[in-house]
Length: 115
Length: 115
Image 1: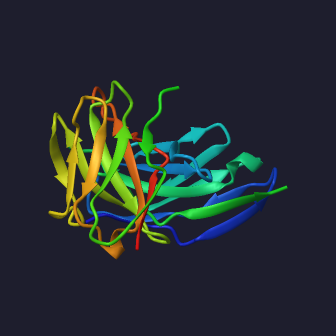
Image 2 (image 1 turned 90 degrees about the vertical axis):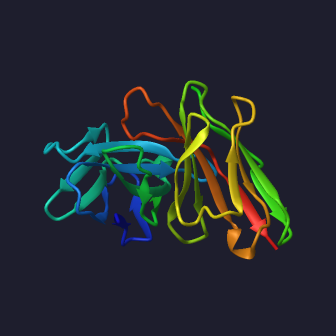
């Protein structure tokens, strides 16, 4: 069974600063996806960034980038130039590439961006 | 931009009562999901649904739970006889099948409180 662990329940960062959210996972499989989802207060979860495990290059989406360390089973999210709108719950998630397998989520990290 | 909508946003019910949570997935999506999050815990997979039948379900999804797509647009989750431990936020999600990318589109959630 796959597990996802987010060890930081809450974090805060000053506006315009950089913050890194940690995520580790456990699997015996080799082909999978990793995701970061963002859930702003009272809003739906939206996909922030996705990484395919077979790709060595770290995914980047504007101010969001990941540090994917496959051997260490680590998948951290870096948010650069933090903005007030980045305040949200961030969930790390895992999905096997084969078949219609469900997303496995971590517990989430509540990020507060402070003006 | 199309989005997944859920109703009600919050429902309070007495233990033993039946509850139906409703979802309208994105119209061209073919896969539908229910997840739940008990306060302070992980987002957990309940069930996936494709081609008018359950494609996968978790251990949580016991005989008290059922899903239905009654009219081609709504996707419902029914809990026949609610228990205190069913209190949680329930998230509906949908995804395209054409290219399996793992991206799910979530609704804002329905908060269920069982007294």
